Image 1 (tube, rainbow, N blue to C red):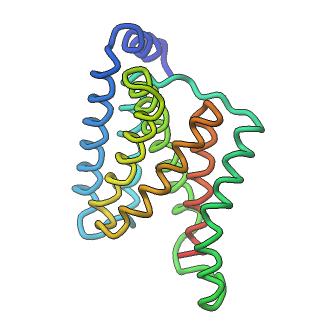
Image 2 (image 1 turned 180 degrees about the vertical axis):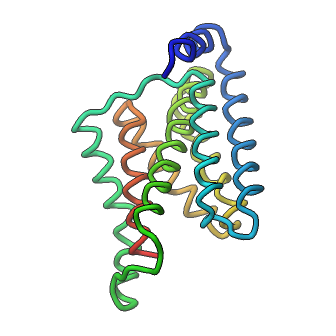
Length: 202
C-alpha cells in the first residue's frame, strides 16, 4: 500500500463517524455487486474478468473505509482451517453419497486464483472494514448481523434467492469466527478454503 493510501486510510479511521463508514461500506459493496453482474452478463459467476473486477472493487472499498492491517498467525489460520472443515462436512457427505468426489471440467489454477482473490476481498470488506465500523457504531452483535446479512444478499444477484438461507448461515459462522479470533484472518482463511473445496464438492 502506498504512503498516500496509508495516510488517507488513517484520516478516514480518525475522522469518519462509524455510522457513515458503515453506510459507505454497504454502498460500496452494492456498487461492486452491480459491477460484477454487469460485467458477467449471462456467464454469471463463471466470468473470470467479472470476478477480478469484483475483488478489486471490494478491496478498494475496504481500504477506503479504514480497513485495519490484518494480522496473520498460525492460531488464526488453524481456526480458519477448522471452520472450513466444519462447513464442508455436510456437502462432502452428500457428495460421497452421490457417487464420490470428482474433478469437474475446467481450468483449476485460474479458477482457484480468482476464487482465493474474491474470497479474501469479500472478507476484507465484510468481516474487516464493515465489521469494524458497525461494531464501533452499534456493538459486536450488530456487526455480526450486518456483515452476515450483507454476505447473504451479495450472492443473490449471481446465484439467486435459493442460496440466501445457506449463505446467511455461513455468514453468521464467519462472523462468529471474527468475534472469537479478533481478526479477519480466520474468516478469510475459512472462506477461501471452503470455496476451494467447492471445486470437488459441487
